[in-house]
Length: 423
Figure 1: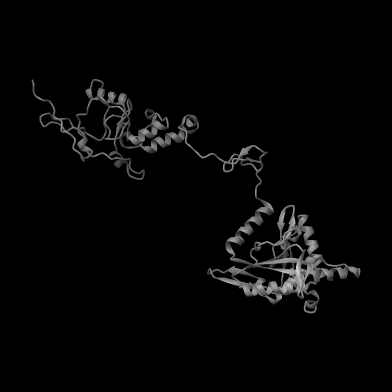
Figure 2 (figure 1 turned 90 degrees about the vertical axis):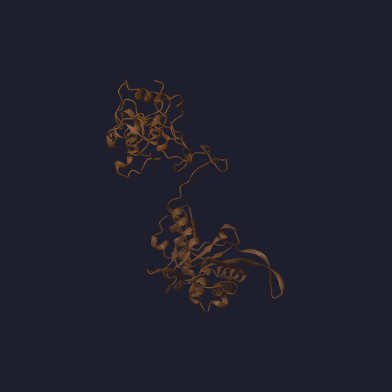
């Protein structure tokens, strides 16, 4: 009587996990467990009552800084730990033997069902009853994989009760089209009137234009041209009763003549197997021209256009324009051009830095023809003026070649009769 039963050594700063447990008194021996399994104590065992008190108050004495709130007034363990405890559950690929070093918390009424605080928290957050799980670890140890398996098995039933996970809202409308006011744009705050999918001709054009801009180092040159002489030539032909080609056909004839003189603009760049590039030059010209249709912008091409007269070019341009608008143009008629002529003057604009029709290397644009003040032989006069714009791939030629071609076409428009003998 009157002698101390046990002494407690205070925990020092920086002590390991084993130091957190009270050391047994030398005068009072403690019975060591006979194996790795912690058997369920009998109801009369004082330690069992301590465990029950721990479960009522929270996870109790697990680790400093870990466990659920509570634990005030809980009976302390008098059993020493055998080894240091791990701070986190090991990776799933490690053998089950390593799992036995985890921090363990007893599940009431479940023999051998001991888990780490991380696994216990995972089960609590997802509403999993640990008493219904058979552990796959040594001696029935419940592992994280056991909780995950239980979640997968009970997914359909537990989904409404699961902890909600914050996800970004999907766009208000993903169908092909929506009615006006059915959704609001998150950026502008305005109602979305409709959504139109990019497909068909529009999708092909968009992909081709994006590829052109990303691959081709393009440059643009332009010049104002006095087209009065060409307009007068056509009017003179009409007066004679002959069928007169359109202005675009004449310009197309000038373009084919210019490409024969400057063949660098009638080429294509290809990448060979070793990654190097080469310039492919063609023996002939497939002259493409931009045509606006109900299905979008398409570029049919006149095959071997350099062999045709202005009148023949006019007939082919009219035919291909009609089949393109009817949606009957063949792939060969739409995808074999070597250079493109774009008459955007029909839209009432003067100029445009056009995008090259990949894999071609040049495109010539023609603006509207309008009356403008112009100096002729030192005198101011009103003339029919248009603007030519050439966009070219700077990899195949420099500004000198591009400017020479553009000037050739411009001179042909300004002096058509002087060029007729050569073309």
